[in-house]
Amino acid sequence: MKHKNTNPIFFIFLLLLLFSACENEGSNQSKKMLVPQENIKVRIPKFDGQSAKDFIAKQLSFGTRVTSSEGHQKCKEWLVATFKSFGAEVIEQDFTATTYTNVKLNGTNIIARYKPNVKERLLLGAHWDTRPFADKDPDTTKQNLPILGADDGGSGVGVLLEIARLLNENPIPMGVDIILFDAEDYGNANGEPETYGLGSQYWAKNPHLKKEDVKYGILLDMVGAKGAKFSKEGFSVQNAGVQTNKIWNLAKSMNKQNYFIDKTGGAVTDDHYFVMKYFGVPMLDIINRPTDDFGFGDHWHTHDDNMDIIDVKTLEAVGQVVLATIYKESNKEF
Image 1 (cartoon, rainbow, N blue to C red):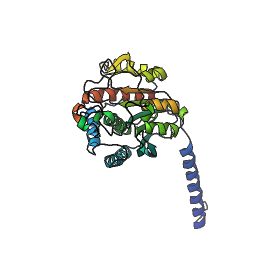
Image 2 (cartoon, rainbow, N blue to C red):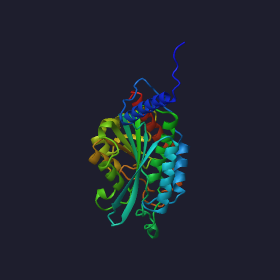
Image 3 (tube, rainbow, N blue to C red):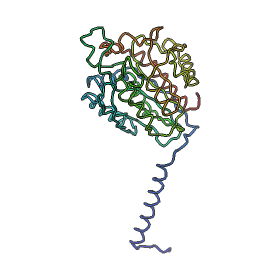
Image 4 (cartoon, one colour):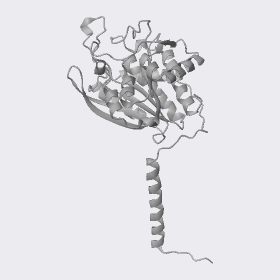
């Protein structure tokens, strides 16, 4: 019969050694950036346009989301909680900014991370604030009132929330960062472009990750309106031309060419511009410009930017193309 050590001190010593080893292994693992496993391929899930529309309606239930307002704060709490419920690691990047009207804003960029330790990553973005005045509204008595922003702000967030839900249900080995930029739409329509995109300017100068870990980014802005047309935005073609052409070709192969128009439009100083300028990675902008003169639609910066303008088919077209891009990149098929 073999000797059996019944000394309790001996067992305590063994347990301490095992605990120490596990703790060190976990600590080292959390600091190590991993390479995604290339042999894991995940089927592209179906994007639910109605679900995205419901996410837009929920945002509007808080009222206008002008940075620093009560509706903005309540919406932020809901967005953070929703991303967490979808399995994301969430970062609230608080910042202060001063507008061109000398108003001090307390903003928050909301960052939802999937597979945060994976080195190869895609960046998805939209702005979640709404414009504090309806400067394009035909009713001049309402031009100083904030807009609900169902399309301009709400639609991009709605699509990204649905993508987050699907990433949680259909996980991929690739890393994905979803950033909801704040204080995008408090800009001077007749002034310097850098009066816009205050949150993206702050994030691009204070990023939460290294640029060498990011393949490229996709920005969604005004992606939910009826009759939307997405031509290739000018800065996207100049600085993310390869990625832009790939995605528009993918859209054509998916029979979405009535939405993704194969022509180059004018350049728009949107959040992607500041990400490229200050962070230094290519980022393309999917943005609605339904007319040949590159206008943003009759509802833009008016009080008609409400749920009546939102179309499930437009949301599905954009959401399914972006979703296919993510999963094809992860599957090494793109």
